[in-house]
Image (cartoon, rainbow, N blue to C red):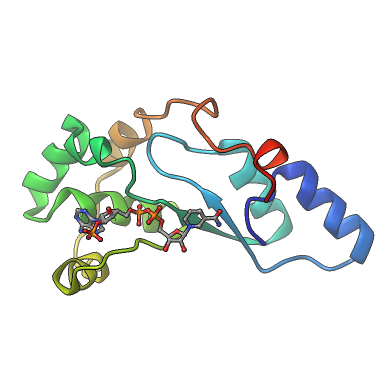
Length: 137
Ligand SMILES: NC(=O)c1ccc[n+]([C@@H]2O[C@H](COP(=O)([O-])OP(=O)(O)OC[C@H]3O[C@@H](n4cnc5c(N)ncnc54)[C@H](OP(=O)(O)O)[C@@H]3O)[C@@H](O)[C@H]2O)c1
């Protein structure tokens, strides 16, 4: 599934009796999508994050830059690691082979609880998230 809000998820499960395996939603530190994440988890659906490191301004946030410096990694790696530590599957896109490799190299460091909390605090709510009820998919 893609862009299923909690109500959509309830509907598809009620109508088919089938629990989808994955729900791909717009999720990043600026948009924590708490209700959608909880609904996915309640149904056992994996949360997949699209635009996981976009907009780029996120990569300049002090909470991200500080963690990157402390771990000797890039800001993109910090944000991608943040996703995985929350149990999400981020799907970053890059046309640059070096960045593609960089985006995969996030499993040899661990953000502290304080670093994760500082990044969580970047949340701006749902207002800037594409609403699939009006966007059409
Ligand atoms: N289901 C949906 O409705 C939906 C909607 C939108 C997107 N998606 C999916 O989500 C995937 C990713 O979304 P997205 O492309 O919007 O967002 P994204 O992957 O978060 O961001 C892509 C941007 O980040 C840059 N970037 C990648 N790696 C980087 C790094 N290590 N450091 C700095 N910049 C980096 C890329 O530039 P370079 O290419 O120059 O590296 C590109 O400008 C897409 O492939 C698409 O399949 C799904």
